[in-house]
Length: 330
Image 1 (cartoon, rainbow, N blue to C red):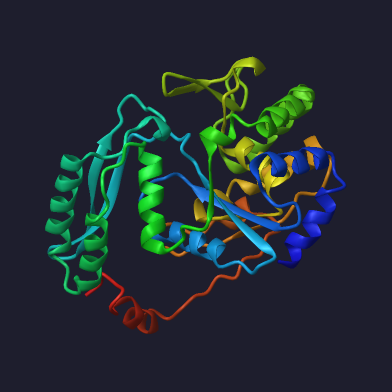
Image 2: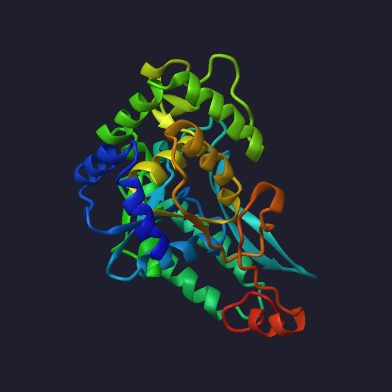
């Protein structure tokens, strides 16, 4: 928490200081707490995501965790990766929703009773192939108790996940709701007042982290119409942030320390550049926490001047742990 304390002092003297105080008041966040933020799309992708949520839930009293629900994303499908054993281990995707028209997640409904029933059947078929399936059966048993909801998919998924993990006290902020706040709108106006500087820096940032550059006339935001995103082309139609502008807002306005997973960590050198070039300050701290072997470590070239504690193990020592009662390995 030491870095968060130092960042809170520095940011209170920076160009976004008034906006930071106003945003906490608007969102009902305490001014005196050290806020640590993280988040992800409301999708069942891998357990490293839940590890960050558990970490935020267990912060000491001086800290307050915020979980960002990125319901502004528009994936091709909502699916569950499920381990399966035939002659070797693999995983299948059980698709809950196809999304060919790319609605944002906030526009997808919660699963109804019949869809949940079919999902439970498909999960049971696959989990029954595992050797040590008791732990997974317990998880599936809990999942099968989740009832249909009148709300949307993000609400249903976040509520089910929180009940399972015991993280119900963790404050959750949905990106679609956050984007309608006065704080976010003020941040957008602040950037619009520095348009040339901001767009030049953004172009440098996306090149640094390997994201697609903006097309001519585009802004690094989305407009939203009937649940679908398209590139914003003027400041009046800015409705949702893109990846770098979302993290720029959260790190600059909402929190004192930002915690990434493996995938998002590769973006932060670009956001650090935005702080230096647009805000004229050294970027506040951020960290990286993951709990999956499904993704590769971020390459050093994408994370200049960052040091991470990689823990490497002899596979002969690692396998007994992975083959224990909490594992799907045989």
